[in-house]
Image (tube, rainbow, N blue to C red):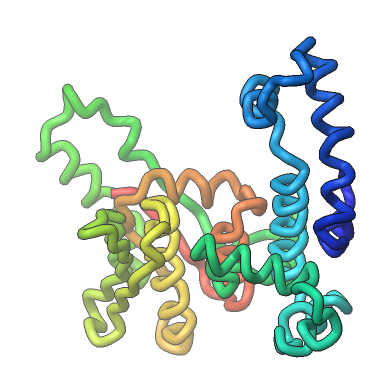
Length: 268
């Protein structure tokens, strides 16, 4: 059962498929006819047809939510549920059922990102470099003074750049996640934001860098080159890898390509 449209059929029609499914599981297991249905599911690791239909509906709605130009988008998300109920008075249809699933699972569709943003082409040059040379130092054998000297060396190397200090520890306090960007020469431009409670530390670190880039765009009339100092090694490695499958990485590069100044990000 691979089609999402099965979910729009009446329940008594769908129940006719269950015995066929159960018989297939019994044959595969060599189980008795009297074996409980739930035991068949547990032994085979197979979901029920109802759960399969639910999963297909979930996947369809989640994908559709990211494609606002899809012709079905307005039908599903812009049509009042009362209109669907008026058409199928006997029971809610596929759309109403699926949206009810999301509501019961406490899943917000507002967090789904649209896919209208294009990935930067691989041949395009980006005015950004990443320096993680501090990671080459052996922590056990390197003193704090040595780290400080190395930092000042990096800082001197980019002395003609406007410094943006970006600290993103990604720590959670009572399940709250936040990120921040600090501008030493323009404290009023320093930014902080909270993320969703389910957000990871990695997302918080990238969000902090995105905050810095957003503010950098406003400073291009005053400065030509910028350097961001970040303590988020995983975020810098992800940016360096140019893994555009990660939405946050794609968003950062699309921010960078919209303004001409040179940006350097250094790990501290």
